[in-house]
Amino acid sequence: MARYELKLPKMGEGVIEATITAWVKDIGDTIEEDETVLEVATDKVDSEVPSEVSGILVKKLYEVNDVVKIGEVVAIIETDQEIEEDNEIAVIENPELAEIVNEEETEKEDNSTTEIVSTEMRFYTPLVKNIAKVEGISQQELDKIKGTGKNGRVTKDDILKYVADKKAGKITYTVEKQEYKQEEPQTKSEIVQSFQQEFSTPEPSKIAQPKGIILDNGDEVIEMDRMRKLIAEHMVNSKRISPHVQSFVEADVTKIVKWRNRIKDEFLKKEGEKITFTPIFIYFIIKAIKDYPMINVQVDGTKIIKKKHINIGMAVALPDGNLIVPVIKDADRLSLTGLTKAVNDLAKRARENKLKPDEITGGTYTVTNIGSFGNIAGTAIINQPQVAIMALGAIRKMPAVIETPEGDLIGIRHKMILSHSYDHRVVDGMLGGLFAKRVAEYLENFNGDSLL
Image 1 (cartoon, rainbow, N blue to C red):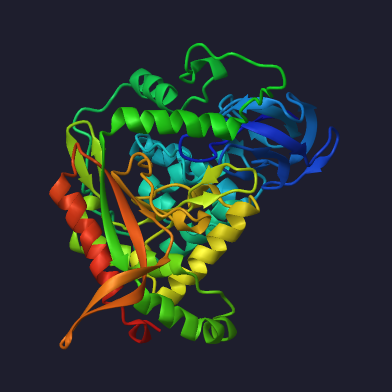
Image 2 (cartoon, rainbow, N blue to C red):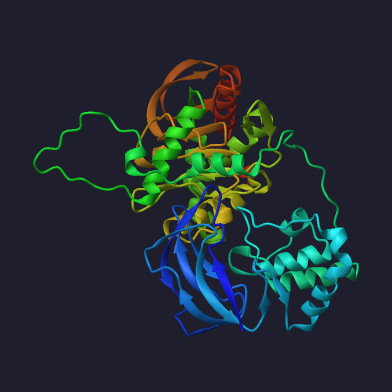
């Protein structure tokens, strides 16, 4: 019997630790490969930690409510499978896997330079990494395999099927040309130090505090929870990193209001979804991004990375008062109906704490609807590493001048304020202002019947 060290996997971008919320398995319990052993929570999302091997749980190294660093050993599993010091599986009793592993020595030279690692988006078990290494599957290729495990995790069966299909000629794979490469890669220690500085969960004393706070009788001192600490640190970092500039545009959205009021009942009956204003606004923000693609960029030192995909982050207020930003991936490929369903689904699961790790990463532009709280305008803080964010103000009935062939009239119109915050390092006033103006133009020239 061998002892396998179960380590806490990566949970998402910027997450370096997690809190154990429950042990699904107790000491002495039998565990199947890929079966959940414990549940953990981070500042962004809850997740399950599966076992990479079959065996018996013999030791828990942490208790419920303990905070554990990513990569730390959380449990010991006794297994019949032989394991190496780094937990890479060397001998597997499955005939298919045994054949693959036995071929490792003959292919070792060809694949010795191929290193498969778990990323912020996906966690790979040592077994999956070992199969990929022996079969010459690159990291880029592995990342594209559709996983059937928890949170889209690639299981043993997934990669074996992929290998079999590939050998049978059912799958062809071409490595895509990389649009961006780091010319001067950082050393491992530099990367770790940078990561810790940017994303470490701050202690209360490390968060900037005003001096001279005096506690009076009856004052209540409330300790920030972990999520609020991280939000505080990220907001401070964003203001430190990006010189924020704001542009404001007023948009007449009367056509949109009337159209939504006319079709909302029919839409609900047909699609089973309520159509709110948020997906409509996102739809036209995406159109404006296509017109001004330099809004959809990120900054790496003195380099500007022009993002190929348009991934829209949508700020969601949680019941506990905190904030999370789920991401609609490739939002420009969705119709208005598709966006409506995506917005409703992500918002619902965000409030229920059911988001997957890859659903809160990879955003390229963020939208926050402060109008839902009755605010007419606001200056939102950029969600790093993005360079811009748009705040949608409340829609209000306003008196306005209406131009007609017979002359100007005063009428009641539905109006709102769009507030565009952008990073002045790479987005100047002209681009930031024209982008906001283009969004307003799309909203005012709305023709909803052509979108459904």
